[in-house]
Length: 225
DNA sequence: CATGGGATTGACT
DNA sequence: GTCAATCCCATGC
Image (tube, rainbow, N blue to C red; front, side):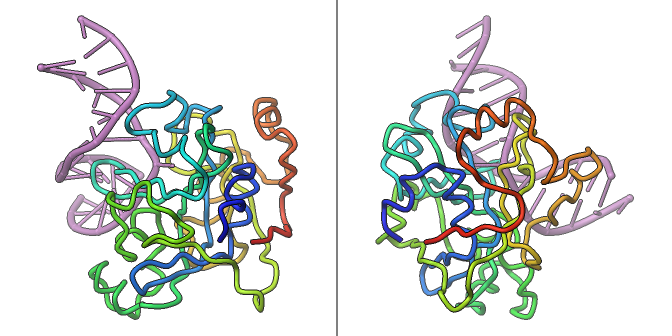
């Protein structure tokens, strides 16, 4: 993937990354779930501005932002938007494609349990062998790379949902999932459905303001790598 | 310098 | 469903 792909609106990139392929150290998987984060909203690490921790987020697009979550898990993000804007797409789940034996070994699971290898942001970094050392590396030609979506698969149908596992800006529907995928960290709608949110429902005022002209619609999409 | 809170997972009830 | 593990870093004294 070229750097220009990541220089765009972070919501457009989060949507377009669905169906793309992440590779590292001989292992790879298709992205089936992402979340967008932007320095204009409080759930984003970059909301507090430039610090030693968030330096990578404000760097040039196409870098990997890897940080430690809960002191346990390394989480992989793709830095987006022009340099100086703190924005990134969190890669939340992959459908394993290659190197399944090695990924299973890293996860401590039998290779037959493919569904559990990469169905979560901490799981997929463990499976791929992505660590904090990869923070700041290039996703276009580094150890961890993101390639375009296989043409033969056609355009994926992407569903929107609220982001998972955060306590701030929970109203923003900035989670993107491949429709029908069995490799998601959690189902679309899931626990949030009880809260009354539906992808086709009107967005809250704050969400509309933040979404601006991104034009990401519920249901079908035509994102292109 | 001390403190508290996470963009989570897996084990256990 | 609940809950501990575990550690970096932003914040506040």
